[in-house]
Image (cartoon, rainbow, N blue to C red; front, side):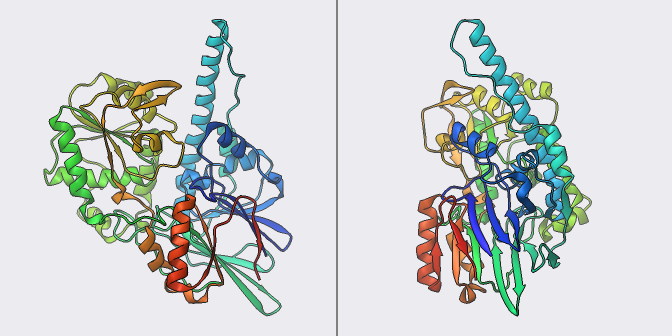
Length: 470
Protein backbone atom coordinates (compact mmCIF):
# COMPACT_ATOMS: atom_id res chain seq x y z
CA UNK A 1 0.00 0.00 0.00
CA UNK A 2 1.48 3.33 -1.11
CA UNK A 3 0.39 6.70 0.28
CA UNK A 4 1.06 9.94 -1.63
CA UNK A 5 0.15 13.45 -0.48
CA UNK A 6 -1.13 15.89 -3.11
CA UNK A 7 -3.04 18.53 -1.15
CA UNK A 8 -3.52 20.18 2.24
CA UNK A 9 0.18 19.63 3.02
CA UNK A 10 1.81 22.51 4.91
CA UNK A 11 -1.37 24.45 4.16
CA UNK A 12 -5.05 24.12 5.09
CA UNK A 13 -6.76 23.80 1.73
CA UNK A 14 -7.01 21.39 -1.18
CA UNK A 15 -7.23 18.15 0.83
CA UNK A 16 -6.28 15.22 -1.41
CA UNK A 17 -4.33 12.08 -0.48
CA UNK A 18 -3.74 9.14 -2.82
CA UNK A 19 -3.74 5.51 -1.72
CA UNK A 20 -2.39 3.06 -4.31
CA UNK A 21 -3.39 -0.51 -3.50
CA UNK A 22 -4.24 -3.68 -5.48
CA UNK A 23 -3.52 -1.87 -8.73
CA UNK A 24 -6.12 0.81 -7.95
CA UNK A 25 -5.79 4.52 -7.19
CA UNK A 26 -8.05 5.76 -4.36
CA UNK A 27 -8.39 9.38 -3.27
CA UNK A 28 -9.08 10.49 0.27
CA UNK A 29 -10.90 13.79 -0.43
CA UNK A 30 -10.62 15.98 -3.50
CA UNK A 31 -10.80 19.58 -2.29
CA UNK A 32 -10.32 23.00 -3.82
CA UNK A 33 -6.98 24.67 -3.16
CA UNK A 34 -7.35 28.33 -2.10
CA UNK A 35 -4.57 30.91 -1.94
CA UNK A 36 -2.62 32.88 -4.54
CA UNK A 37 -4.97 33.08 -7.53
CA UNK A 38 -2.49 31.87 -10.14
CA UNK A 39 -1.23 28.98 -8.02
CA UNK A 40 -4.77 27.98 -7.03
CA UNK A 41 -5.95 28.06 -10.62
CA UNK A 42 -3.04 25.88 -11.76
CA UNK A 43 -3.40 23.31 -8.98
CA UNK A 44 -7.16 23.02 -9.27
CA UNK A 45 -7.12 22.62 -13.04
CA UNK A 46 -4.21 20.18 -13.30
CA UNK A 47 -4.22 16.88 -11.45
CA UNK A 48 -0.91 15.02 -11.01
CA UNK A 49 -2.55 11.95 -12.57
CA UNK A 50 -5.26 11.30 -15.20
CA UNK A 51 -8.74 11.64 -13.74
CA UNK A 52 -9.81 8.38 -15.37
CA UNK A 53 -7.05 6.53 -13.46
CA UNK A 54 -8.83 7.13 -10.12
CA UNK A 55 -11.07 4.23 -9.19
CA UNK A 56 -12.83 5.65 -6.09
CA UNK A 57 -13.01 8.71 -3.85
CA UNK A 58 -13.53 8.33 -0.10
CA UNK A 59 -14.87 11.68 1.08
CA UNK A 60 -14.54 12.78 4.70
CA UNK A 61 -17.01 15.68 4.58
CA UNK A 62 -18.60 18.34 2.41
CA UNK A 63 -16.53 21.45 3.08
CA UNK A 64 -15.29 22.87 -0.18
CA UNK A 65 -11.60 22.45 0.70
CA UNK A 66 -12.30 18.71 0.92
CA UNK A 67 -14.94 18.17 -1.78
CA UNK A 68 -14.80 21.20 -4.04
CA UNK A 69 -12.58 19.88 -6.83
CA UNK A 70 -14.56 16.68 -7.43
CA UNK A 71 -16.26 18.25 -10.50
CA UNK A 72 -12.80 18.94 -11.98
CA UNK A 73 -11.92 15.30 -11.38
CA UNK A 74 -15.10 14.27 -13.19
CA UNK A 75 -14.30 16.72 -15.98
CA UNK A 76 -10.87 15.06 -16.39
CA UNK A 77 -12.37 11.60 -16.85
CA UNK A 78 -13.17 10.16 -13.39
CA UNK A 79 -16.26 7.94 -13.42
CA UNK A 80 -15.88 5.87 -10.25
CA UNK A 81 -17.98 5.93 -7.07
CA UNK A 82 -17.65 8.61 -4.40
CA UNK A 83 -18.32 7.13 -0.96
CA UNK A 84 -19.63 9.38 1.81
CA UNK A 85 -22.33 9.59 4.46
CA UNK A 86 -25.84 10.52 3.33
CA UNK A 87 -25.60 13.95 5.00
CA UNK A 88 -22.30 14.67 3.24
CA UNK A 89 -23.82 13.60 -0.09
CA UNK A 90 -26.81 15.90 0.40
CA UNK A 91 -24.62 18.83 1.45
CA UNK A 92 -22.39 18.30 -1.58
CA UNK A 93 -25.48 18.43 -3.75
CA UNK A 94 -25.92 22.02 -2.62
CA UNK A 95 -22.26 22.96 -2.38
CA UNK A 96 -20.91 21.65 -5.67
CA UNK A 97 -23.78 23.15 -7.67
CA UNK A 98 -23.20 26.46 -5.92
CA UNK A 99 -19.44 26.28 -6.47
CA UNK A 100 -19.95 25.61 -10.19
CA UNK A 101 -22.40 28.50 -10.44
CA UNK A 102 -19.84 30.82 -8.82
CA UNK A 103 -17.10 29.53 -11.13
CA UNK A 104 -19.24 30.39 -14.13
CA UNK A 105 -20.32 33.79 -12.79
CA UNK A 106 -16.80 34.79 -11.74
CA UNK A 107 -15.48 33.91 -15.21
CA UNK A 108 -18.33 35.91 -16.77
CA UNK A 109 -17.59 38.91 -14.54
CA UNK A 110 -13.86 38.86 -15.28
CA UNK A 111 -14.39 38.47 -19.01
CA UNK A 112 -16.73 41.47 -19.09
CA UNK A 113 -14.12 43.54 -17.26
CA UNK A 114 -11.35 42.38 -19.62
CA UNK A 115 -13.51 43.21 -22.64
CA UNK A 116 -14.22 46.69 -21.26
CA UNK A 117 -10.50 47.33 -20.76
CA UNK A 118 -9.71 46.16 -24.27
CA UNK A 119 -12.37 48.48 -25.72
CA UNK A 120 -10.71 51.37 -23.86
CA UNK A 121 -7.39 50.46 -25.42
CA UNK A 122 -5.94 49.11 -22.18
CA UNK A 123 -3.97 45.91 -22.08
CA UNK A 124 -6.21 43.21 -20.70
CA UNK A 125 -5.82 39.63 -19.63
CA UNK A 126 -6.93 36.80 -21.86
CA UNK A 127 -10.47 35.48 -21.53
CA UNK A 128 -10.88 32.93 -18.75
CA UNK A 129 -12.82 29.69 -18.63
CA UNK A 130 -14.59 28.53 -15.46
CA UNK A 131 -12.73 25.85 -13.52
CA UNK A 132 -15.80 23.67 -14.02
CA UNK A 133 -19.43 24.11 -14.96
CA UNK A 134 -22.78 23.18 -13.47
CA UNK A 135 -22.88 20.31 -15.98
CA UNK A 136 -19.60 18.98 -14.53
CA UNK A 137 -20.98 19.28 -11.00
CA UNK A 138 -24.18 17.46 -11.93
CA UNK A 139 -22.15 14.65 -13.50
CA UNK A 140 -19.99 14.34 -10.38
CA UNK A 141 -23.04 14.21 -8.11
CA UNK A 142 -24.30 11.18 -10.01
CA UNK A 143 -21.22 9.29 -8.74
CA UNK A 144 -22.05 9.63 -5.03
CA UNK A 145 -22.92 6.47 -3.07
CA UNK A 146 -24.14 6.86 0.51
CA UNK A 147 -22.55 4.70 3.20
CA UNK A 148 -23.50 4.59 6.91
CA UNK A 149 -21.23 5.09 9.87
CA UNK A 150 -19.69 1.90 11.32
CA UNK A 151 -20.31 -0.28 8.26
CA UNK A 152 -17.46 -2.20 6.58
CA UNK A 153 -17.38 -1.14 2.92
CA UNK A 154 -15.20 -3.09 0.42
CA UNK A 155 -13.10 -0.77 -1.77
CA UNK A 156 -10.61 -3.19 -3.41
CA UNK A 157 -10.01 -6.95 -3.44
CA UNK A 158 -8.10 -6.80 -0.14
CA UNK A 159 -9.21 -3.51 1.42
CA UNK A 160 -12.31 -2.21 3.16
CA UNK A 161 -13.02 0.98 5.06
CA UNK A 162 -15.26 2.13 7.89
CA UNK A 163 -16.39 5.61 9.01
CA UNK A 164 -16.98 7.17 12.42
CA UNK A 165 -18.54 10.54 13.28
CA UNK A 166 -15.78 13.19 13.29
CA UNK A 167 -17.96 15.80 15.04
CA UNK A 168 -16.77 18.54 12.67
CA UNK A 169 -19.73 19.06 10.32
CA UNK A 170 -23.07 17.42 9.64
CA UNK A 171 -22.15 13.98 8.26
CA UNK A 172 -18.39 14.43 8.70
CA UNK A 173 -16.32 11.27 9.08
CA UNK A 174 -13.02 9.95 10.28
CA UNK A 175 -12.20 6.65 8.61
CA UNK A 176 -9.98 3.58 8.80
CA UNK A 177 -8.85 1.73 5.68
CA UNK A 178 -8.03 -1.90 6.50
CA UNK A 179 -5.96 -4.05 4.14
CA UNK A 180 -5.91 -7.80 4.79
CA UNK A 181 -3.59 -10.04 2.75
CA UNK A 182 -1.82 -13.33 3.44
CA UNK A 183 -2.85 -13.25 7.08
CA UNK A 184 -1.47 -9.74 7.63
CA UNK A 185 -3.40 -6.56 8.37
CA UNK A 186 -2.49 -2.91 7.82
CA UNK A 187 -4.82 -0.17 9.09
CA UNK A 188 -4.61 3.43 7.84
CA UNK A 189 -6.67 6.04 9.69
CA UNK A 190 -7.66 9.36 8.09
CA UNK A 191 -8.95 11.85 10.62
CA UNK A 192 -10.67 14.14 8.13
CA UNK A 193 -11.28 17.29 10.17
CA UNK A 194 -11.66 16.56 13.88
CA UNK A 195 -14.39 18.53 15.63
CA UNK A 196 -14.71 19.81 19.17
CA UNK A 197 -16.81 18.58 22.06
CA UNK A 198 -19.72 20.80 23.03
CA UNK A 199 -20.21 22.70 19.77
CA UNK A 200 -23.79 23.50 18.72
CA UNK A 201 -25.94 21.20 16.57
CA UNK A 202 -23.77 18.14 15.84
CA UNK A 203 -22.56 15.31 18.05
CA UNK A 204 -19.10 15.19 19.59
CA UNK A 205 -16.29 13.28 17.81
CA UNK A 206 -16.46 9.52 18.33
CA UNK A 207 -13.70 7.50 19.98
CA UNK A 208 -11.65 5.74 17.31
CA UNK A 209 -10.20 2.20 17.48
CA UNK A 210 -6.52 1.34 16.93
CA UNK A 211 -4.66 1.81 13.65
CA UNK A 212 -1.10 1.44 12.39
CA UNK A 213 -0.82 4.75 10.55
CA UNK A 214 -2.64 8.05 11.02
CA UNK A 215 -3.18 10.96 8.62
CA UNK A 216 -4.32 13.76 10.94
CA UNK A 217 -5.30 17.37 10.44
CA UNK A 218 -3.33 20.07 12.26
CA UNK A 219 -5.24 23.28 11.49
CA UNK A 220 -4.97 24.49 15.08
CA UNK A 221 -2.05 22.24 16.01
CA UNK A 222 -0.11 25.14 17.51
CA UNK A 223 -3.01 26.93 19.15
CA UNK A 224 -5.50 26.63 21.99
CA UNK A 225 -9.12 27.77 21.71
CA UNK A 226 -10.92 29.85 24.27
CA UNK A 227 -13.65 28.07 26.19
CA UNK A 228 -16.60 27.47 23.83
CA UNK A 229 -19.01 28.09 26.73
CA UNK A 230 -18.45 31.85 26.42
CA UNK A 231 -19.17 32.03 22.70
CA UNK A 232 -22.83 33.06 22.98
CA UNK A 233 -22.07 35.90 25.40
CA UNK A 234 -19.18 37.13 23.24
CA UNK A 235 -21.34 37.06 20.12
CA UNK A 236 -24.04 38.99 21.96
CA UNK A 237 -21.53 41.66 22.97
CA UNK A 238 -20.28 42.07 19.39
CA UNK A 239 -23.81 42.51 18.03
CA UNK A 240 -24.85 44.88 20.81
CA UNK A 241 -21.75 47.04 20.44
CA UNK A 242 -22.26 47.51 16.70
CA UNK A 243 -25.97 48.19 17.15
CA UNK A 244 -25.22 50.94 19.68
CA UNK A 245 -23.05 52.63 17.03
CA UNK A 246 -25.84 52.26 14.48
CA UNK A 247 -23.62 49.90 12.50
CA UNK A 248 -23.79 46.55 10.80
CA UNK A 249 -22.15 43.26 11.70
CA UNK A 250 -20.79 41.67 8.51
CA UNK A 251 -19.92 38.00 8.95
CA UNK A 252 -18.02 36.02 6.32
CA UNK A 253 -19.11 32.51 7.27
CA UNK A 254 -18.90 29.11 5.69
CA UNK A 255 -22.38 28.48 4.32
CA UNK A 256 -22.28 24.93 5.61
CA UNK A 257 -21.71 24.43 9.31
CA UNK A 258 -20.66 27.83 10.62
CA UNK A 259 -23.74 29.67 9.35
CA UNK A 260 -26.08 27.17 11.01
CA UNK A 261 -24.13 27.46 14.29
CA UNK A 262 -24.43 31.24 14.20
CA UNK A 263 -28.14 31.12 13.44
CA UNK A 264 -28.75 28.77 16.37
CA UNK A 265 -26.78 31.02 18.74
CA UNK A 266 -28.53 34.17 17.50
CA UNK A 267 -31.85 32.38 17.98
CA UNK A 268 -30.96 31.66 21.61
CA UNK A 269 -29.70 35.23 22.19
CA UNK A 270 -32.92 36.64 20.69
CA UNK A 271 -35.12 34.41 22.85
CA UNK A 272 -33.44 35.60 26.04
CA UNK A 273 -33.33 39.22 24.82
CA UNK A 274 -29.54 39.33 25.08
CA UNK A 275 -29.18 41.29 21.81
CA UNK A 276 -31.11 44.29 20.42
CA UNK A 277 -34.17 43.58 18.31
CA UNK A 278 -32.48 44.11 14.94
CA UNK A 279 -32.89 42.28 11.61
CA UNK A 280 -30.62 39.33 10.87
CA UNK A 281 -30.00 38.23 7.28
CA UNK A 282 -28.44 35.05 5.94
CA UNK A 283 -27.50 36.19 2.45
CA UNK A 284 -26.39 33.05 0.66
CA UNK A 285 -28.41 30.73 -1.55
CA UNK A 286 -26.01 27.96 -0.56
CA UNK A 287 -26.60 28.58 3.14
CA UNK A 288 -30.37 28.45 2.55
CA UNK A 289 -30.05 25.13 0.72
CA UNK A 290 -27.60 23.75 3.29
CA UNK A 291 -29.95 24.69 6.12
CA UNK A 292 -32.66 22.60 4.46
CA UNK A 293 -30.23 19.66 4.50
CA UNK A 294 -29.62 20.29 8.22
CA UNK A 295 -33.38 20.21 8.81
CA UNK A 296 -33.53 16.87 6.98
CA UNK A 297 -30.78 15.09 8.93
CA UNK A 298 -32.04 15.44 12.48
CA UNK A 299 -30.42 12.06 13.22
CA UNK A 300 -27.07 13.89 13.34
CA UNK A 301 -28.13 16.41 16.03
CA UNK A 302 -26.74 16.56 19.54
CA UNK A 303 -29.10 16.53 22.53
CA UNK A 304 -29.24 20.33 22.85
CA UNK A 305 -30.41 20.88 19.29
CA UNK A 306 -32.77 17.92 19.43
CA UNK A 307 -34.58 19.66 22.29
CA UNK A 308 -35.63 22.44 19.89
CA UNK A 309 -37.49 19.81 17.89
CA UNK A 310 -39.07 18.32 21.02
CA UNK A 311 -40.42 21.77 21.87
CA UNK A 312 -41.86 22.15 18.38
CA UNK A 313 -39.36 24.90 17.48
CA UNK A 314 -37.23 25.37 14.39
CA UNK A 315 -33.59 25.82 15.49
CA UNK A 316 -32.83 27.58 12.21
CA UNK A 317 -35.80 29.95 12.06
CA UNK A 318 -37.07 32.82 14.26
CA UNK A 319 -38.89 36.12 13.94
CA UNK A 320 -35.99 38.48 13.23
CA UNK A 321 -34.23 36.13 10.80
CA UNK A 322 -34.58 36.31 7.03
CA UNK A 323 -32.93 34.06 4.44
CA UNK A 324 -32.00 35.78 1.18
CA UNK A 325 -31.89 33.81 -2.08
CA UNK A 326 -32.55 36.33 -4.84
CA UNK A 327 -29.67 38.52 -6.02
CA UNK A 328 -31.92 41.59 -6.19
CA UNK A 329 -32.91 41.10 -2.56
CA UNK A 330 -29.21 40.80 -1.72
CA UNK A 331 -28.44 44.10 -3.45
CA UNK A 332 -31.38 45.71 -1.66
CA UNK A 333 -29.64 45.14 1.69
CA UNK A 334 -27.28 47.99 0.78
CA UNK A 335 -30.21 50.42 0.77
CA UNK A 336 -31.48 49.49 4.23
CA UNK A 337 -30.73 51.79 7.13
CA UNK A 338 -30.00 51.05 10.76
CA UNK A 339 -28.22 48.23 12.59
CA UNK A 340 -28.37 44.68 11.28
CA UNK A 341 -26.42 41.44 11.03
CA UNK A 342 -25.51 40.06 7.60
CA UNK A 343 -24.08 36.55 7.41
CA UNK A 344 -22.81 35.64 3.96
CA UNK A 345 -20.44 33.22 2.24
CA UNK A 346 -17.61 32.56 1.63
CA UNK A 347 -15.95 31.91 4.98
CA UNK A 348 -12.53 33.13 3.83
CA UNK A 349 -14.05 36.04 1.87
CA UNK A 350 -12.71 34.73 -1.41
CA UNK A 351 -15.89 34.64 -3.50
CA UNK A 352 -19.63 35.14 -3.45
CA UNK A 353 -21.89 37.84 -2.04
CA UNK A 354 -19.72 38.54 1.03
CA UNK A 355 -17.30 40.41 -1.26
CA UNK A 356 -20.03 42.91 -2.14
CA UNK A 357 -21.00 43.38 1.52
CA UNK A 358 -17.38 43.91 2.53
CA UNK A 359 -16.78 46.38 -0.28
CA UNK A 360 -19.86 48.38 0.78
CA UNK A 361 -19.31 48.25 4.56
CA UNK A 362 -15.68 47.70 5.51
CA UNK A 363 -14.77 51.41 5.28
CA UNK A 364 -17.42 52.55 7.79
CA UNK A 365 -16.09 52.70 11.40
CA UNK A 366 -19.59 52.11 12.77
CA UNK A 367 -19.57 48.60 11.32
CA UNK A 368 -17.98 45.37 12.53
CA UNK A 369 -16.43 42.61 10.45
CA UNK A 370 -16.79 39.43 12.51
CA UNK A 371 -14.40 36.59 11.58
CA UNK A 372 -15.59 33.22 12.88
CA UNK A 373 -13.35 30.68 11.13
CA UNK A 374 -9.80 29.89 10.10
CA UNK A 375 -8.44 32.12 7.34
CA UNK A 376 -5.89 30.52 5.03
CA UNK A 377 -2.78 32.34 3.89
CA UNK A 378 -3.23 34.90 1.10
CA UNK A 379 -7.02 34.98 1.37
CA UNK A 380 -8.91 38.25 1.83
CA UNK A 381 -10.13 37.07 5.22
CA UNK A 382 -6.53 36.49 6.37
CA UNK A 383 -5.51 40.00 5.24
CA UNK A 384 -8.37 41.50 7.26
CA UNK A 385 -7.43 39.44 10.34
CA UNK A 386 -3.79 40.53 10.00
CA UNK A 387 -4.90 44.14 10.33
CA UNK A 388 -4.11 45.40 6.85
CA UNK A 389 -5.44 48.95 6.55
CA UNK A 390 -6.21 48.55 2.86
CA UNK A 391 -7.34 45.45 0.95
CA UNK A 392 -8.21 44.71 -2.65
CA UNK A 393 -11.81 43.73 -3.37
CA UNK A 394 -12.73 43.02 -6.99
CA UNK A 395 -9.26 44.26 -7.92
CA UNK A 396 -9.72 47.71 -6.34
CA UNK A 397 -8.20 49.05 -3.09
CA UNK A 398 -10.62 49.59 -0.19
CA UNK A 399 -9.76 51.15 3.19
CA UNK A 400 -10.47 49.06 6.30
CA UNK A 401 -12.04 51.29 8.95
CA UNK A 402 -14.61 48.89 10.43
CA UNK A 403 -13.96 47.16 13.73
CA UNK A 404 -12.54 43.66 13.16
CA UNK A 405 -13.39 40.96 15.69
CA UNK A 406 -12.05 37.39 15.56
CA UNK A 407 -14.01 34.63 17.34
CA UNK A 408 -12.17 31.33 17.11
CA UNK A 409 -14.42 29.86 19.79
CA UNK A 410 -16.79 28.72 17.05
CA UNK A 411 -14.08 26.87 15.16
CA UNK A 412 -15.12 23.40 14.08
CA UNK A 413 -11.49 22.24 14.34
CA UNK A 414 -10.00 20.69 17.47
CA UNK A 415 -7.08 22.63 18.96
CA UNK A 416 -3.73 21.18 20.04
CA UNK A 417 -4.90 19.72 23.36
CA UNK A 418 -8.14 18.42 21.84
CA UNK A 419 -6.26 16.64 19.05
CA UNK A 420 -3.92 15.03 21.59
CA UNK A 421 -6.92 13.84 23.63
CA UNK A 422 -8.66 12.53 20.48
CA UNK A 423 -5.69 10.35 19.53
CA UNK A 424 -4.92 9.13 23.06
CA UNK A 425 -6.99 5.89 22.93
CA UNK A 426 -5.14 4.56 19.88
CA UNK A 427 -1.78 6.38 20.11
CA UNK A 428 0.15 3.41 21.59
CA UNK A 429 -0.52 1.31 18.48
CA UNK A 430 0.59 3.91 15.92
CA UNK A 431 3.74 3.38 13.86
CA UNK A 432 3.67 6.79 12.18
CA UNK A 433 1.60 9.96 12.16
CA UNK A 434 1.36 12.17 9.05
CA UNK A 435 0.25 15.72 9.81
CA UNK A 436 -1.72 17.51 7.08
CA UNK A 437 -4.24 20.34 6.74
CA UNK A 438 -2.19 22.85 8.70
CA UNK A 439 0.32 25.58 8.07
CA UNK A 440 3.84 24.36 8.77
CA UNK A 441 4.29 26.19 12.09
CA UNK A 442 1.08 24.69 13.50
CA UNK A 443 1.93 21.20 12.23
CA UNK A 444 5.44 21.45 13.67
CA UNK A 445 4.14 22.53 17.08
CA UNK A 446 1.72 19.60 17.14
CA UNK A 447 4.43 17.18 15.99
CA UNK A 448 6.59 18.22 18.93
CA UNK A 449 3.74 17.65 21.40
CA UNK A 450 2.88 14.25 19.90
CA UNK A 451 6.50 13.17 20.20
CA UNK A 452 6.74 14.37 23.79
CA UNK A 453 3.40 12.87 24.82
CA UNK A 454 3.29 9.55 22.96
CA UNK A 455 6.78 9.03 21.54
CA UNK A 456 5.34 8.40 18.07
CA UNK A 457 7.23 9.22 14.88
CA UNK A 458 5.64 12.22 13.17
CA UNK A 459 6.10 13.27 9.53
CA UNK A 460 5.00 16.58 8.02
CA UNK A 461 4.89 15.64 4.33
CA UNK A 462 5.44 17.91 1.38
CA UNK A 463 3.39 17.82 -1.80
CA UNK A 464 4.22 14.72 -3.82
CA UNK A 465 5.87 12.81 -0.95
CA UNK A 466 5.14 9.04 -1.06
CA UNK A 467 5.36 6.40 1.65
CA UNK A 468 5.09 2.62 1.58
CA UNK A 469 2.89 1.39 4.43
CA UNK A 470 3.61 -2.11 5.65
